[in-house]
Length: 65
Image (cartoon, rainbow, N blue to C red; front, top):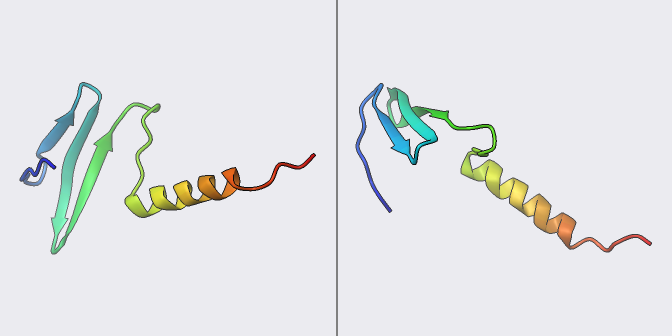
């Protein structure tokens, strides 16, 4: 894992298509702005895991005939 330090308004560039910017730092929370193409999905981890669970559940359902 790459670990970087950034200050408010500083950016991280991923490849040629994704930019992450520190928008605000308040206490122990950091607000990030993410600029990515529409074909790149961006989710918080808990949202991603819920989507994955739902997909896994749907793929295990029996097919109706």
